Image (cartoon, rainbow, N blue to C red; front, side):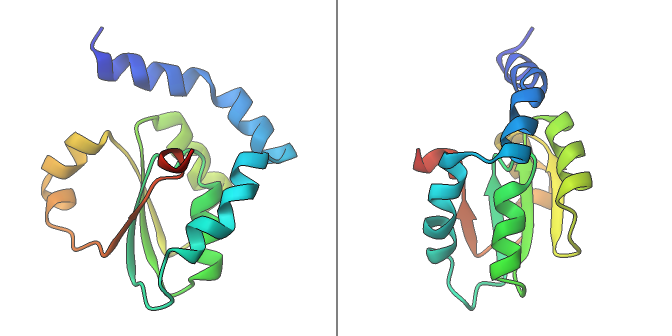
Length: 123
């Protein structure tokens, strides 16, 4: 098993705890929401979110920056599937991919994305 596959499996297998956080709240997400959104200019129009999980922060961003088009990336296909169901929005495109593969693909590499965010990088 490759390292990337091991990471995908870990995040796919931890979906239950992620759902609990989504339903009952998570102080980490709640405490950083304002910080994340405050760093995104009002004029931002394209954003890449790395490690979007089930889309909770992604949907918070688009709610406060409705003009922003967001590409939300996560290595876990299961989390992307849940994100599409729980936090769907016309301005959010969810993609199951690791960052390296996304950057190399035609659609990923050719995109012009003005901002980058990752909640996990703030912890």
